[in-house]
Length: 234
Image 1: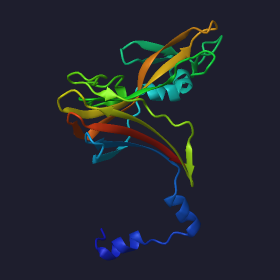
Image 2 (image 1 turned 30 degrees about the vertical axis):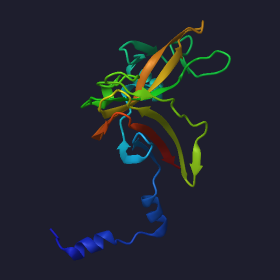
Image 3 (image 1 turned 180 degrees about the vertical axis):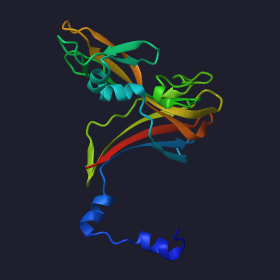
Image 4 (image 1 turned 180 degrees about the horizontal axis):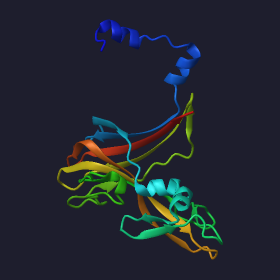
């Protein structure tokens, strides 16, 4: 075994040809970041919180890879709503295909971001979560927070070799007491057409979940804005 500063120096300064070094230092990657800005009753920023986000749920994975799951297992995908109901998503049943519908002016199908929900609990295995452990409801009563309107970008921002988009939502504490936030989740309303008659099966589903490494306490009158940044370099 070789031990010593000279060995460390040789390893850290190993010569790599320029074309090879660029390939090593630059790799395509996807990242998600959760940021929370807390303000007092006068709107002054009093706390900034930021952490890496890495908890897509089972629902999210199924929506991304339904055909792979179907061909590997022979089973249809079952997506669980926040109420515990299930949505069957069979990408193809031998006659016709199921498919996800999005909002449009003609049919008004409602697949969109419902809200960025916060809660006062946590899960040890967020992958299996289909709702927050202890979701905080919307309102100004005891234990509630007022949820503002979600902000959803209309375009993806391109900056250099990076593409990203940010979704956000404000919330305010008017409950008369201090409320602690320890979990955050993204909930969308999903609609799936499941037969040739265009019948729609859907509901609200949790697609992303994070437990805060440091819980945030909001005193009465304080507000917070939750930001999720999703980016990829290419």
